[in-house]
Length: 508
Image (cartoon, rainbow, N blue to C red; front, side):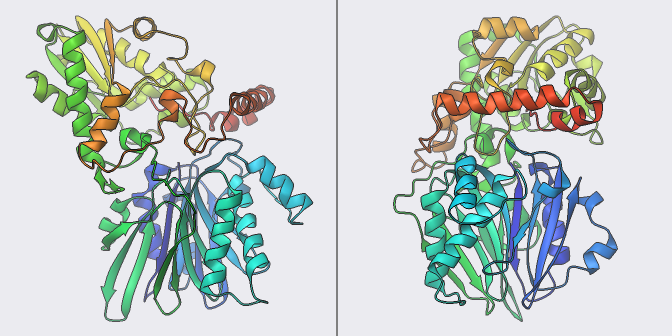
């Protein structure tokens, strides 16, 4: 899960890209970077940390040009918090190319070997994004007519990327002296939307991971980039597009709607906010079947992404909705905290109870999902400590039983609380009197209710079905063994241990 932006404007784009990254900061807090193009020259600044910490006035002044891309990074499988893996990435041969990538390649190791043995290209980091950049550069070299690029060459190179790369990728690319390229994998797993802004100097184009970036920057949403499609905006501000995959299928990651995306975004034509309202309605129907409604006095959300679902659930049940937790917005997300003990401590620092909403009441807590269960357990304990007579727990998402390999660095199967446990056993683990999970069919229906033509999703973290068809049990075993080996090695050194644990995600 990363945030990407690409813009072709009539005025300098550095501030525009910075503002866009601030809007997409929820998609990655590990590192940030901006690259701009001024003629045939690139200017770039990137580094670890939040957007506001990476860029200073002197950095912004060093980013001239009316065209650029930006990236905020969330570390995924195989990556680290090393500043060398901050994006965008750059390669100068055979054409100057700068690339930002959201997603994760499932065949990165195979491609890396091909790069070394066949394509004679060297990969400097462990990042699959650098692998993708070099695949694109090689395909451009292979299809180019001499040392010049044309539209057919550019789109043919993207077709070559689709043939060779597996997994999820939404990509923005600057090509020196030519323009801005963007494309999406043949399944459209990760989101990418394009918008326009009409100015006296001509039409401006902005591509972003979420529509909220277009809204806040004053661009009108044109449409989503289609699965397998490539968009190219040249230096004359002309937009060209072409389908570069033979068999594209739209199968967006359903976890974008559950948790990842901002509620004010629209992804593939579906409002995230409205989807979460529908999740609450479907979840209410299941709560009715599982818990006597008269046994619930109040519905309380776990801030922030579960609020729409909790509100709609409460309305459907006819039970008061209350805000029982106050969130400290100056504490980092719990899933990027180093180690379990620190993560537990951070929950207490991040959330505090409004005691009167719990004392003497039977409460139903609603969260967007449960991954490790660590945070859920702490929250249940906090509710009881505040005086709750009973604590029921409801998840707007189904049980997370499998890793997500498409750009969300979820824990190993052994760390997922739902692996090998029934709902009753999970309820016992987190200390709840009862636990209700959303059904997967109901989660899908929450989106289809709003767009019936959207029939296919990546739901791999819930059902273990990976849409790209290349993720085997052996692949998952290899990923988990590599992760466990890195954690064990890092634990021998305190400082390294902290950095390694930054790669472990716990969404709850």
